[in-house]
Length: 281
Image (tube, rainbow, N blue to C red; front, side, top):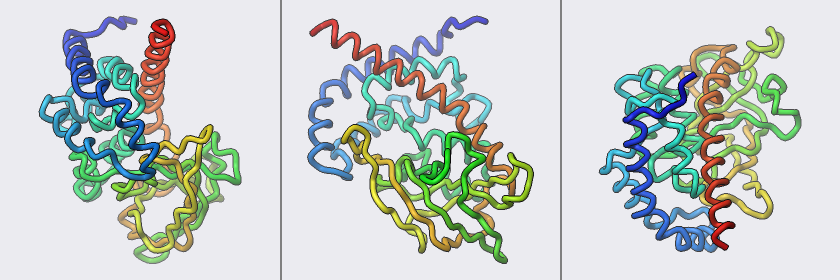
C-alpha cells in the first residue's frame, strides 16, 4: 500500500503546524493553569482560538470526503497526520472542532442521521455552537464488549423510555454539552448483535442525572469530563432513534472505526512531543 502523503495533506500539515506554533503553544501553560483552578469552566480564550482556526480554513477537518458538502474533502490517510500535530497538546483538537467525542457523534449524524436530526444537532455541532457526549460504557458489565450493555430502550407509543446507568460518558460535563448519543437495548431477546440501538437524548431531559465526574490519576479532564450518569424513565420522541431498532452495534462499529485512527494518531503526537521534551531536558 502507498502511505505517501498527498500534496494536499502536506500543505495542511504545514498550516496546522504554523497555527499551533503561533496560537497554541504560547498559551499552553496559561490554559493548563486555568482549567486546573477553574473546574468545569471553559478557558476564556477558547472562542477566539476557534474563530481564528475557522478563519484560517482549519475547521471540521475530520469528516472524510465521502460525506460530500459536509466534508473538507480529506481522506482518513490525509487527515491522520493532522491529528498527530493537533494531538501534541491534548486539548488542542477542540480549537479546530476536531475533538472527541464530537467528531464521532458528528460522523454518526452525518452517516446515519435523518435530515431532521442533522438540522437540529449536526449543524450546530459543525458550527461549534454546542458540544455532545457519548453514553455507551456501563459500570455493571464488561462494556469492552458492547453486546453486554444493559440499558433498556423501550417503545411506548410515540416515545422511547430509557433506563440504565452509564459511566465514562465523555463530554457530558462540558457546560456546552447539549446532546447525548445513548446506546442501549431495544430487544434483549434478539440475536446478539441486533439487540442494541442508539438514540439521541437532549441534555437536561427529565430523568437524566449526572452522578459525578470520574478522574484518572487524580485528573478530571476539565472542562470535558467523563461522567457517571443515571437514566431513569427518560422519555424522548421515537424520532430520536438513529437508523432503526437493532442497528446500534452497526452504528457503533461505523463510529468507532475512524475514531480509533484519530485517537491513535493523537497519541502518537503527544508521545513524540513527550520524547522531544525529555531529550531537551
